[in-house]
Structure formats: structure tokens, C-alpha cells
Amino acid sequence: MAKVIVVTSGKGGVGKTTSTAALGAALAQRNEKTVVVDFDVGLRNLDLVMGAERRVVYDLVNVIQGDAKLPQALIRDKRLDTLFLLPASQTRDKDCLTAEGVERVMAELRKHFDWIICDSPAGIERGATLAMRHADIAVIVTNPEVSSVRDSDRIIGLLDAKTERAERGERVEKHLLLTRYDPVRAERGDMLKVDDVLEILSIPLVGIVPESTDVLRASNLGAPVTLADSRSAPALAYLDAARRIAGETVPMTIPGEKRGLLGKLFGRRAA
Amino acid sequence: MTKVLTDTRSIRIKGRSFLALVLSPEPPLDAWLTRLDDLASRSAGFFLGRPVVLDVADLEIDRAGLKKLIDELGQRNVRIMGIEGGRPSLFEPGMPPAMKGGRPAPDIEIPAEPTVEPVGAASAKASASSVLVEPQAARAISSIVIREPVRSGQSVIFPEGDVTVVGSVASGAEIIAGGSVHIYGTLRGRVLAGSVGNASARIFCRRLEAELLAIDGVYKTAEDMAPNLRGQAVQLWLEGIRSWQKDLTEPAAGQHTGAGRWRK
Image (tube, rainbow over all chains, first blue to last red; front, side, top):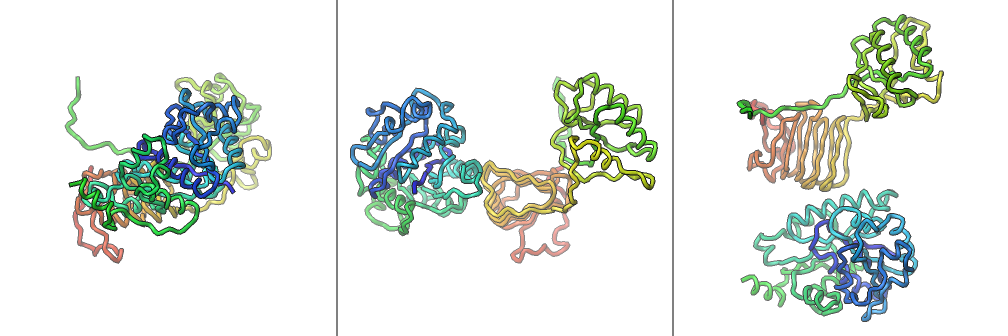
């Protein structure tokens, strides 16, 4: 049974695209057929993070407008057989996305994939609402700071109002993914603590991804962080988050609570 | 020239709803007016001093016709306060304003002489196609309960009475209630209680982090609130503010004597 996940946040720059790629690769590594779909028409990035920017021929808008068939637009990952990318168009804008077109593409993807992960654009306009429209599961990416938390709260409200599931009277399963978490700064009070964010948003936590240079390095290499260095702290956090999304019970570790190598590294950098 | 405000009190604006009589004329208008005359002769002064709204949604009428109709009604001492369901092109300056967003209310019984049929029933029989005012059972809905958090950007508007939220009200969310507001969680957004002119409305919350509070149009922003109330469980009313006691009972009488309103 195919599941559609939307990775959304409201605010820009919190790590939606990074998280989409990382979770996509993590789910595909479980040998489940996964496609990541870029909804950020006009400002596409997912192809870069996936390292597929030189292989884009057709895109989501071509498929919606009927210029290309879906299999023509899907790009298979070179590292993982089970991972695919449906890129966005860079030359168009979000008005090219139509509700009927997106619905058709989603229905077709559901026939072929186990996981369909939609990378939502920032904002609450057309692109974002269409990306969340068909979702069964929402991953809300939030940074531990007030503006990101408030925007996430707004998005959660929209998920309960504007999705297909909400209109049928069902609920979208919601998960909070806390990214760019710096335990030292949280301890100093420069950042919101995990408990504060959870108290405000009151949705279940699916993972805490520590702030790390590994993420930037992976993006520049054109590899999802879970593929670039699967032993790094952010990769481990994403791998655990993917297992939780798939329904497994994995104990949660809050970075900084165990004073391991990671804690020392953070401590040194902050000093 | 700029006027210098010597009195810096803010102007209070309130909403209020009135029950208006709605007349829905039916063609042919001459016959309808005759029936209206008949009604007026039986219960003289029925329309006197009552707000009357003219519903022209189902009436094929042009601007001249509407003007004539308003004149005819004026001659019968029926003063029209607004027109519902009219196309914008029907209106011209000097006409009663267009109204929309009306909610149905029960049919109004006309105090008539015995054995006379009320006009509401008569018109309902005369034409099934005319807009019927649905006779609704008068249900007293005086409160609603919201069982989940109110998220940023959402508003709950309930002029009819009290609002209870089982959860938090987020920053950027708002609750507007005709009566009191009860929040079993943290209040970070805005709450406007007693919005239809109810000065006895109160605001209760488990933890106060609000952006804006208002009771009966008298408001207080986060900056004006006493800092010792932040993060506390509080009950707020118009004469003063004090911490909510742990057992959620009212503070003992006489403990607060200040009658100063928040802001006049």
C-alpha cells in the first residue's frame, strides 16, 4: 500500500529538501521502492541534492501538461535501485501546477511505489498546498527557533483543513522533525529546547537532526546525507526517523544528553 | 492642518445583531402589494418601528422597478433598512444599502385578528419557489468546545456565547467569543471575549502568554500586561486582573476593589 509523505515547514531554509533526500534514501535502503518528488517549481533544488541535475530531461510540469509520460520523467538513482526522483521544472512557476494534474500524477505514482515523498516549497501558497493535498503522512521540518515554530504551527493547521484526507474527515498523520538542533546553544537558551517546541506544536516527534557540517558537505557532493556518510550523526538521525515513519519503534536520543564524542565536538566549537 | 488629539482614548466599536423582518415580494407586484395592504389593515402599525429588509433574490426586477417598489412601501409606512440578494447594478445612491450574510431565524407570527391566516404561511403556499425562511427550532447554542489546539492563522469566531478550548491557542491564532473564553492550555495568541458587548465576559487560561486580550472591546496588548501574570494560570475580567487561584475558585470578595478598567 503506497504512502504519500509531504515534507513541509512553511518557513524556508529549515532543511525540507535535505530531509526529503535523506529520508527518501533511508526508506529506499529498506528495499522499498521510493520516489522523491520536487514540488518547488521554479526554484528546484532536490535534483542537486540527489546529484541528478545533469540527468533531468522531463519534469513534473511536463508530465502534468501531458508533454511527457511519467516513466520518461522519473530518474533512477545511480547508487540505489529502489530510489527515484521526479524533478521540478526550473523555467516555469507554480501556476503550472494544476489540482487535476497533480492528482493524476499522484494516483499513477501510487501504483508503482511504496513511498512517495513530496518536497514542498516554502510558503502556504499554491505549490505548498498542492504538495500536501494528497498526503497520508506529513513530516513537519522545524528549526528550534520561534519563527520556524510558528510557521510550522500554521502549516499543521492547513494540514487539518486543506488536504484530501481532512476533507474526507480523516486525519493526516503528522510527525515533527527537528533539524539544525544545537544542544549547546539550546542549553544556553539561545535556541528553543526540544520540550518547548513539542509543547507548542503538540505533535509527535519523529527525529532530532543535529546541526552538522556533514549535511552541507553531502549537499555539495550531490548525495543524500544518509548515503554520503551513513555513520555521521545527522545520517543516523535520519535513518532512525525513517524507521519510525515506517512504523518501527526506535528509542529517541536527544543530542547532547549523552556526552559522547558528538557532545565534545559541539562543546569545543561553541567555546 | 493637523488636528491635535487632546483626548487619546480609543474609540470603541462593537457589533450587535437585531432581528429584522424580511419581506420577499412576489410577482405580480400589484397583487402582492394588495395582499400587504390587506395585512396592514388587519394589524395596523405592524411594520411601524421595526427594521424591515427587502429580499429581492428571487425577484426579476430592474432598478426603476425596485425604486418604485421602495416608494410604494414607503407610502405604506414600511421603511426599508436594507436590501438583500440584489445585484450591484440594482442599486443607486439614496437607496437602502445592500445587505448580506443574514442568518435564518424563525418565522415571525403576525398578531392578527382571529381566523386570519398569517402572511408567512400564505406566501409559502402561494409559491414554493419563493425563498422560504426555514422555520427552525429555536435551539439555544450558548457554547462550543474545541478539542484540539488552535493553530497559528486559525480563528474561532463564536458571537453566540462561550468558547472552550481543550488545548493551546498558538501565537497568531485568535478566538472571538460573544461570551467568556476558557483555555485548558497555554494562551499564546489573541482572545477577544464579550465581543458583542458583554462586559461581564471573562477569560480563563492555564498559562498566559497572550499577544492580545480584549473584553467588550477594551483591549490590552502583551506589552501592557502586568509582567507577573506571564506564565501564570489566570482569570481576567474587566475591573481588574489577578492570578487564578490553584483550586480555580474565584478570589475572595473584597480582595480586589479597584474599579479601573484596563483602558478607557
